[in-house]
Amino acid sequence: MLDLKIYLILGAILFCIGLIGFVSRRNMITMFLSAELMLQGVAINFLAFSRFRGNLQGQSFVLFILSVAACEAAIALALIVILYRAKNSLDVSKWQDLREEDLEPNEDQEILLVDSYQVQPMPTLPVAGHRPAQEEDASHV
Image (spheres, rainbow, N blue to C red):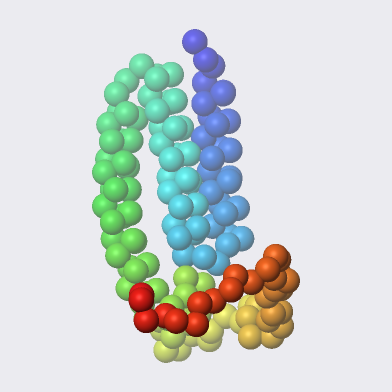
């Protein structure tokens, strides 16, 4: 049987990975998946304590967590689709107009300018071999 510490370490690692992913990314889907990862880390800790204590309270609480997470996933996906259709981007910094009126918008320190990239022409390959002779009478086609 595995020790309680291993489960708690696993739950803490999942929570920390989710927290780092949520704080460091600006893509809405990545932020949503990071929040789900944090939720699963907490659920593993509940299950570990439930198993260690020998009662079913932690397991029943995890069932509630999973059902709420499923509802949250459906609502979040619908919101992401609606917001993407409005702004054509999943970058959360473009949704500053959703703030309250009295709050100042957050300015990013690093601005990604997509328009400043130089578009390089695609390379072309030389024609290899002979060109086939074309028939001058194309009436039989």
